Image (spheres, helix red, strand yellow):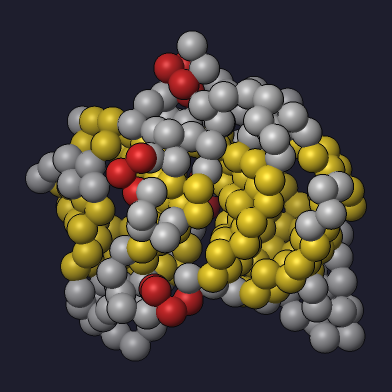
Amino acid sequence: MMITVIESADRHFWANEWLTSRQSFPGTGNFDLFDNAHGVLVMHNDDVVDAGEGLDAHRHQNMEILTWVLDGAVTHRDSAGNTGTLPAGTLGVMSAGTGITHAETNAATRAERTPLRVVQMWVAPHTDGLPPQQSEHRFDDALASGQPVIVASGRSEHEQSGAARIANRFAALHIARPLPSATIDLPGAPFGHLYVARGAVTVHVDGEQLELSEGDAMRLTDSGGVQVTAPLGVDRPEVLYWEMHASFDLVRS
């Protein structure tokens, strides 16, 4: 079992006039995304977008792109004719497949001055050349219980879970907002990636105890089950956890 913690302050940082991007994997600049992959996860950005701003139309191919909206709302438009506004608590899932052009913008006007915060994650698909697809899934109600929710998965065992389907049969994304002082259980896997999107938590895994704060990420290899405990207090933390049963090299071999 191996544990690597990427502290919030050590994330790759990139910014322009309207975007602030903090990246658990380096995603901007002269980087090979696949050389930096952990399991099948190749990008994990925590982005804040100013009101009235966003990314103009740009193209993706052969990548599963998941956008979790933490604050504000994002407007999505793509070349397949999909358009919509995703509020906080919504997961957008785009299978780029043979190729799709899309634009993502903060749904708030400049006058409203409401920032947009999203976590965007890229996962390598298990097969290239699939038809492009886009879907949106709201999970606010499901997360209210404090227990982990499988929000996206390509694993056959999760077909009836209500999770959004992704084109990677080795991976699943769990999100949880544990109740104060409660402990939740997340599955062990050959590869895991735990991200603290809000607050702070205590993590127990294979006899180790670690304290993680907002923005910290933990990469796990060959771990047993993961226990996450929320502190006693009013504000509930929020964690995102990728359970992965293959590496990028195995998926694409």
